[in-house]
Length: 288
Image (tube, rainbow, N blue to C red):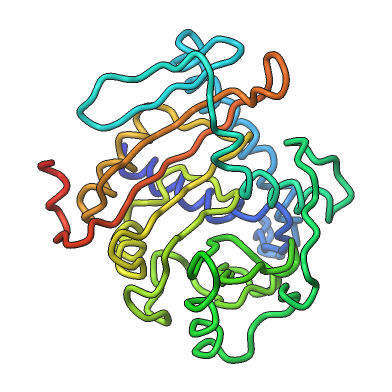
């Protein structure tokens, strides 16, 4: 039962990983005649109900520990750490600014209140790379190293220096069309960072996903899964994702939930981060 539910939620997360994805599906009628149903309309009701329930569960677990301004840090095997204030806006300035860039690109307000950064237009890529080998070589030479953006696409924002967009939907115009559970098209140990940009977590790290992420990261590379303002993970899903990362060999695993402290009672920011050990075999971190 739990396994079936897990797979169902995982499939739903794949379907909604990109909120701008559009598609059509076919439903047979009792007469055997197929009728076309808008995928968005069908998924919205299910997704809304599922997300609302999961959000309520998570908020019930976290809110009593988190006042209007504050942060909660959870590390496996250690007591939860409460901080009266948070440095998350400073620490994640780039990620919040890029999310605001996406919102702004689609005519929406900059929800994190960040200020656009003026960049040399020639340093930004607005088209998918024609040559992946050349792109990876350029990314590795960029200041700050190579950064794989899972869920990224040139439909949403231009790629900044060092960034490579990976997305399973070709219409989002990524550099690499692939699911992060199978990144065999990429070389091993090529990225300094793997960043999930607004991709709902759910049970995404199961079924080989964590091992694939570990493989494409350089030793001491960083993994950052950002669920942003939308989704807080209930404890059961947190535990499953952390367990998957440990089994794959990740260390320094940490969950951070914080208020956006630019406003009283601001929205919650949730993330899961981890590091690939400089020399670690899969499963070694599980006993750490």
